[in-house]
Length: 287
Image (cartoon, rainbow, N blue to C red; front, side, top):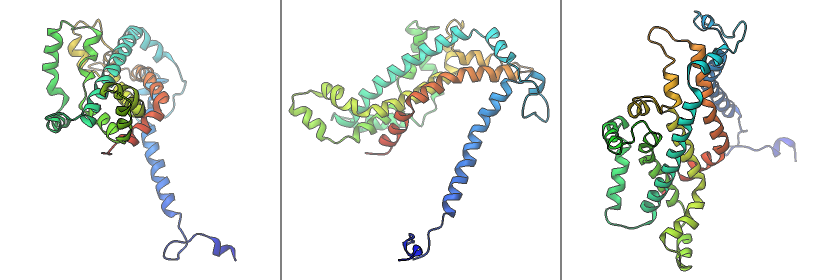
């Protein structure tokens, strides 16, 4: 048998073409370059002088790279105190949302109670409402609890998420009912079944939700400005926003601060990236 006869052929008898694969890889490469370009520009600008960053047309590479922008950022912004506030609010928000979303998602997916479908529909409808519409009610709640200008005030509203509940519901619905039946035969109640059987099986989705919640919490700017009027407990995003002047902005310092502020998110994603992709893929649209 000749070598040509051993080559794979399409259903119509023609030889397979790799043109489609090349087009796909080219499109993915161009998309990746477009996504990475802003981060590369941010990194390069952080090592420029203010004059070089303001030149027109802009320079692609600094003539004499300098780290003065990082020193200026640490001198003009209380980085460590604001970083502590951001990290504390992030930890509270992530832990709270994982607990609430997991319990509520399990209830909507597995428990039978009157009005379950209607209540879940109301949760889904909340996804269509801009979050800014809840600001007044949330502020009044935090004020009545006497939590203004505290770290819990930054985290409490973010513990409740309709998207998180929906994501966890989809994850629990993708698990076969045989596991629950086996747990009930062993005498486990709903809470024990949830904690010992069901929750360990949705760890990838919990990791994905933790990454998304961390992103939203770390980048939140409007809510801290509302609940921290005195500024004693303002996160790092507020410090970055203060670097933008009304009549001019020191872009190298701003880019250096943004680079420093993004490092914790990069670390979180690198640690949980496998759980993130597995969680999104496994829970997505099943059920």
